[in-house]
Length: 523
Ligand code: NAP
Image (cartoon, rainbow, N blue to C red; front, side, top):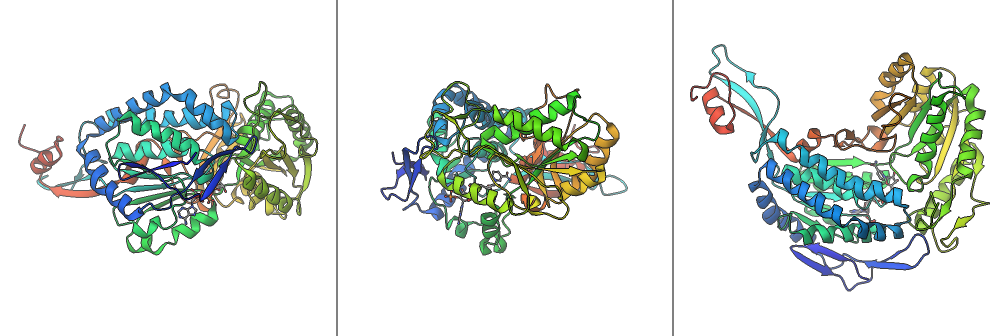
């Protein structure tokens, strides 16, 4: 099957066989992807001249309603997407995060329509009083940028990765070109086809590139926005593109992240907090076979509890069934492909130079279904790093699979310092019911993290977990994590709007914005 690109209002199949995509479970050929022959300059221009004007005619309210209808439309077809998702190596639970989690983003942004109202623009902040007699005031107006959002995505969330981004740019009134990572683009294509078939999104508002997008940044102009999710090396290479600098194009980057989970000093073995901790880190290790940007890579444990954690975690991992996600009882599927398996295996070897493997499920790996040789299966590997302040590979090397390192700490200050040694992460969690510990950790670690979860009995049942970025909250992180910020409810919308200060009399600004300003003399 040749994947289709959607460019300038047409479905385009390239006849060139550039990249073959394989089923992660059994190695069968799934699809062929190629972007050969696509004219990226034309696509960018089509978005700016066809999609942009159509979206800008709509109000925030109308754009929100469009997202809601789209979410409902896609939700009706979700079983088809689950079927396609199997070939990415994902279990039903993994795919739920990707597929229905993605729909959740559409719903969340749809619900913001009441906050933004029924205008094509919005006001931000409060009126600034600029004169003694209040004849001259200031405010801020935000209008959609008149460019295109280019979304370059990672392979691990082919649906969520697309929807978490387009929910925001469509709501803001900006068109997008979606470029999924090629290896899992067959799933993105399946969902994208339904988005276009729905007829709910104006022509030109969305285009799709399955295959390489190398060269697309040569065509960006100052009203465009580029978002990137993927490895730090690719991100850095793209971020330096001269065209982005010349045209002052924002580049939002989400890259590698060595997220950590801290067991509080109060959460001793035998307490419910200890069990919550083991459950949480186990889930983070096996979900999506560890291929989550938010997965727990570093596990910080009070030094007296290290042995208990090793035992409890190993026991849980041993009983985790790995194999074909279509079969009953399978809890962990495969990595996305053989290339990922090779990369993760190499990273394990690098980490093993400076720290000890205390759990290695690979040798005795028994699969329930799936093909051990042709599929991309790997069992979890857990390290112990007894000297995490001096052996620092665990703070720098990200093995993008079911791989984590346990490290001991003495005081909460030590835990904070270790967390910060990740040089900037998307998320950290701490399991504690001691407010003093929670406060010290949160305030001490916050500057190096995009999100911090404080977990205990009070919220564990309803908690969305360490690994789930929520559309209402910001997703991103400083430093190594790329320095970007996505979603965040209303906050994310402003990335796609031009904020302009406006000044004048209250009467004039009331008429321009259709919003009451104190001191106006119309009403
Ligand atoms: P990747 O190899 O860096 O690729 C990311 C994206 O960049 C892909 O869509 C890729 O397309 C595209 N790309 C590569 N070169 C390009 C170019 N010259 N012009 C335009 N696009 C280009 O990363 P990946 O292997 O997909 O993802 C794994 C990594 O992503 C992990 O290291 C993980 O840490 C990181 N990640 C981070 C987050 C986060 O939110 N922070 C989320 C998920 C993953 P092709 O596939 O066609 O090469």
